[in-house]
Image 1 (cartoon, rainbow, N blue to C red):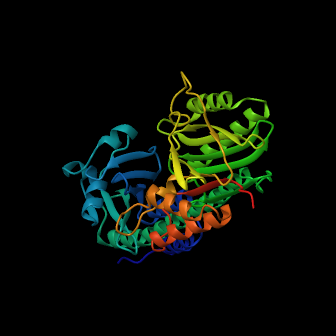
Image 2 (cartoon, rainbow, N blue to C red):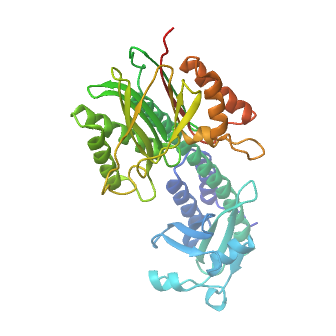
Image 3 (cartoon, rainbow, N blue to C red):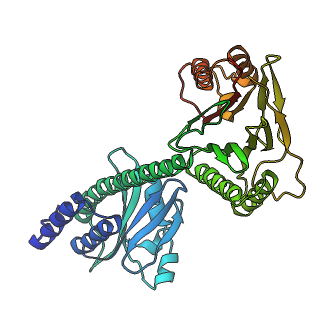
Length: 416
């Protein structure tokens, strides 16, 4: 390799130090391209980053061209990325791989070029560095060796910068999830209400940090609100959907709405705001604790199980409407009325219970739920919920749940 001048050596050392620093990506790439122009005595230099998702090259830094995106089968940069080897072309317009489109767009005339693949420490392509027009001639073997050393440093730094960015984005996502979880949990009842003659319990186990399920057991002027909601999917977006639904429902009842009015208004508002393909299944009921009468509407939430203590068998009720937010309601079916006798047990369970899967693919299903309710309905609701969770864990053989698990159990106490 030809001997470097003192200023050129200082430039390379400065770049090496810069690449080891916690640079932002644009600043780091600008440092590299400026050093390449200076040390290689070139008129222009640029860095193309490889977008693995689209298999394209994206020009991130250039001295006089705006951001450009090209497929990897186009131009000298594409050929370099495809073959993963350095291309030293003394006459670009004589090379059939050369694409003159950028010259026409910028007014620049490319004579000769050095195009180098940027390969990280794992052997993956992260981009391409290109240096154009050697002052007073063409790029020689010494220039190529120098450029390859610079490209190797750039590839490592570029990979490190991307990993750092991914780590920071992961931390931001973690913080966002934690905040979303805190917001969602704040909408759940801090404690369950005391209603004479009734025993109640609720369980909420999201599959991720946030979940698409929610529940409510709150004493209102209209009676005891009994709610179980399940938005499509799980994660931040469904959590926001069910939180929005629950907030609107509480507001409607606080303003004095009856069951039907609240149901219709919340559905129609959600139909306006939820993205296409998003909806919420929900059981919404009001219990008159004095008359022991429960009226409910179910927006796609099923099955609704009512174990009758007198017979020891489960009544199964289906939905009264399509899921909330799917479309505006044109005609609302009448609410279902259930009279609760002593010992009767209402069980509202989300899909995460019924669709809990065993290693062989079998689903837990409604029959297993009904068996547990039938055998142990005389126990307290908290003990019954614990039995259900233990049965799910045993059925899945300890595998983590793939969907949110939410249970609302309400039992009218029998006389001693």
